[in-house]
Image 1 (spheres, rainbow, N blue to C red):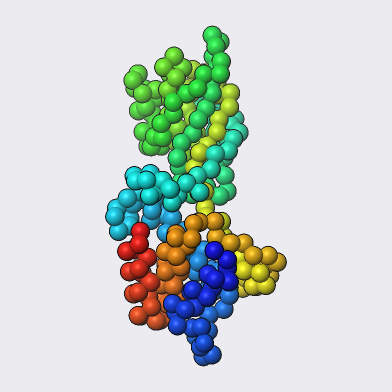
Image 2: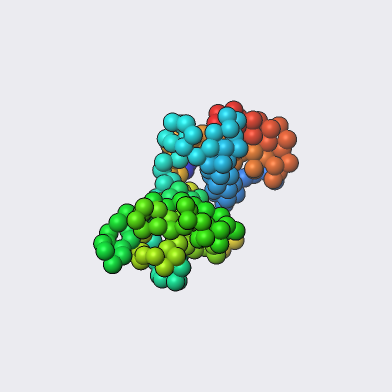
Length: 232
């Protein structure tokens, strides 16, 4: 969907297409509200706080709607004795999985099955014979801490390579010629929303409710919120 159409739809639902009063909506307000709505909608779908209580990959619709945000990239790791650590990407939003290949004196290039664990349980997991890192069974666990992915080895093997699969932040839209009041920078090109048009329609309603709340327009706020949830 083109940004020009997106802007018209938002103004239409706010009843501001022909308004010349002080409640006119500027382009940067549309951009800010829509980008905020993208993040809120995405987090709600991933966590399952939506009308049908469906979270990440719990239905074909969720798989289809959110697949555009799934990203896989190499995770450079360094040896920290009992674990290997790699930095989370800056556009990271939510964990999906981490894959790693390990080696030992006997053999190398063994693909490990890695479970995401709680940082609070690290000492218990390292002590538990059934859950501690094990090269023979090709199983271990990882934790998230301080924007790092920590793949535990318990000094039993070495991690040759790793890659992280995660949900990234939605791409922020930009409207050409619009000046961001927070940075003072003018957008030199149009950056359109990456979601499908049917999802954009839902996010538009979400953005309308945000803008309606900002200008204290109760009717539009209620309509936008209810419509966005009803179509999830």
